[in-house]
Image (cartoon, rainbow, N blue to C red):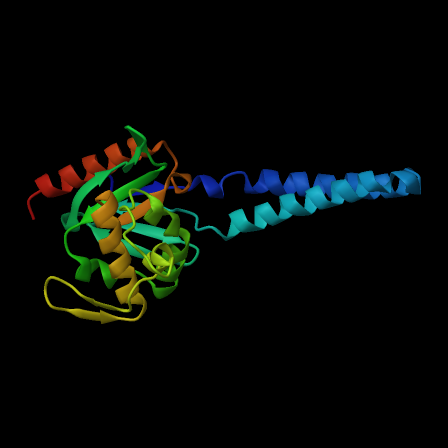
Length: 228
């Protein structure tokens, strides 16, 4: 296994191309305004708007970390524009592409999921901003395999299920409050429904989800097989 395996997010690609498209579009829009009659200014406005969108996309891509994952001999380091988390290979119980029930079939999600052994070790590595971001972005996961709703007089049972309590006690008796507790409760809820704690979107990878899962499994097997 290499000392460090670098994974570049798909979202980081084509930054220069997006900038060039935006700049060329603005130049064409400028020429359009100076050449075409006022009755055709709508074309120039359209080109200007499309160019600004391309430049905005380029800026968003530029803000993404250079590498979304760094795989070392000791851990997985995940980088996000809102922070990072680290997960030791020895703290991973299972890695796979999560599946959900879709009618009578199982449907694979465009994600990679990890089931971890010890929450307390992992929680200390997750930055608070990233916790908040994950709680918001991954909320739709809660709708998968949601248990049938019971009688609900207020009609807000599902909305209440979207909220996480700000207190959590792990299996070791360690207590958490605030954003850490909310994040831990979300992991517990997702584990109960989908079987995993940590989820990463396929768009943050440089290869198909199953290939990335295979890579992580190979890295973990090599690490665990290497004597300390």
